[in-house]
Image (cartoon, rainbow, N blue to C red; front, side, top):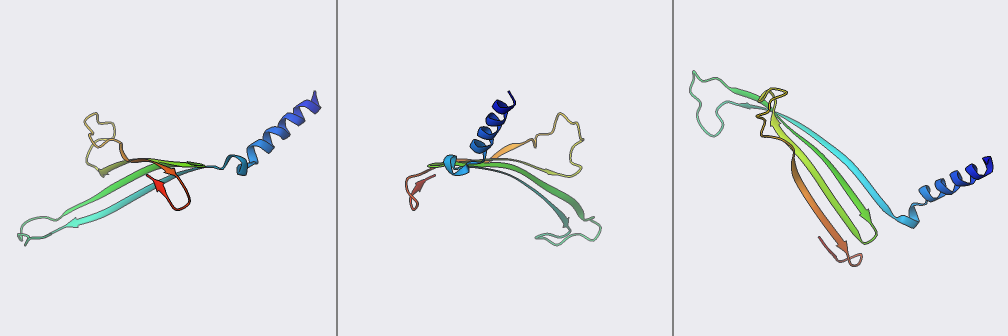
Length: 115
């Protein structure tokens, strides 16, 4: 019994770590960008009694890239918002997650593909 389990584990590990026979790649990536803005007289003369507008915008993105032999696929979603614009648990938040990009690519040769 112990010998059978050892053989099964070795077969599974050798099949799992043989990347050349499958040649599949998966890449998961994330991106978080926050930007502070101070608007005080942008593109116009600002009145002396007006107050400046200060806020922070944020873009969060999560994506997956998958490649296997003759084709590649990419997909990413993003969320854009302004800090403090909505309550944390607000049902009226219209800036939900949206699809940023979704694409597929067929590789006909090393120098020619259709995306």
